[in-house]
Image 1: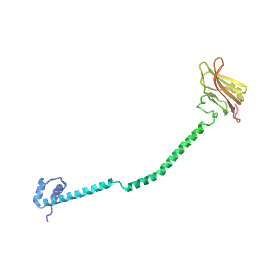
Image 2: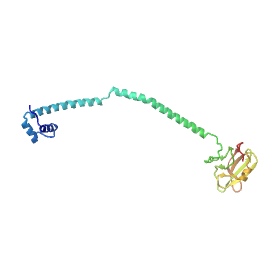
Image 3: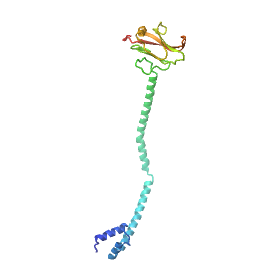
Length: 222
């Protein structure tokens, strides 16, 4: 049995791998030195071709099998749907609960009574007066009324309720707020009602808001 030289093995490997063809000088020299080698390589190539055909057929069968729908697919899909359904229902319930709670809170906020708040910075609503109800002290008075051309605001304060005696009147030309001074505070009773009128130069009222009741908290003084 001939023992091939390492160089012959390299040439043979290149030939089998396709890096050399049978017209290559080194291959021709190898065939000349080993006459039976050409026939053996031919048989090996034929066998390799047969194996490739068998492998291609197997690969096609595998590809077709993968492409076909399986009964397990529907089973797996059903399991996933059943697993996700409770979570989706729970998320939907939480969302609905949040919407209902928001609506309830908004309704409660909008329907709350308009209490006096001496720290308010938003001012009264259109046509409304502030303060009203219990307050710690008379710090300022605000209103929200449109002022007609040639008119001014007239603030009127009465002792007790709306039918009480007028104890003080203040004219404000433009601004929709009035801060009482010490002399004004001395005239304002602990319980009173007040209103704002829009009057022209002749003192005729064209619009107004109030009266509303306001009083000092029992623990507070003027």
